[in-house]
Length: 213
Image (tube, rainbow, N blue to C red; front, side, top):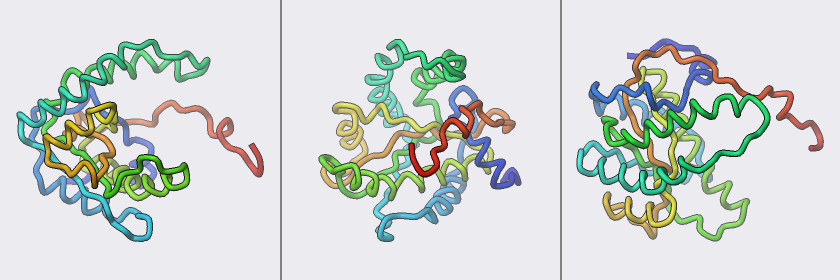
């Protein structure tokens, strides 16, 4: 069932959902595949379509992935965060509290997802890195938008990729580490309520540059 939101409403209300993930409500595979089918309409460099998506429902594997994530996330989340002197400082306590909640409960999500892309960007220059990730990230964001339009939520996390974490996840799930790169780890669940609003952001006028920096 879709929420009948306009494109603008979907774009301005798709949040990184953590505390409002419903861990008790099952997520049917057909809903996930509907969202994936939409996501695969995203652009991809040279029409390569080198993406693959690994969905994890197995309880033991979800717990193992959560442990890999926690090994990196727990020390990171305990680090002091820099002050920036704007609205981001006011939001930091809520953001960190939400992130710590997900860290403690990651494996409770009905489904976890790891998006992957063929190849390894190790050692690429900035231009090639941009081209490489530009063939995966639009599809992942489209997937999150499709989830939102159906009353589900997710959060884009990358901390499991630090150090040996990516290789450990690859071994757990049979992902060919030398041929495929992981782009994140996403909890997927229905949300507790669907009344998500615009986030507080820095004004566009502060971020736009015309003709020069």
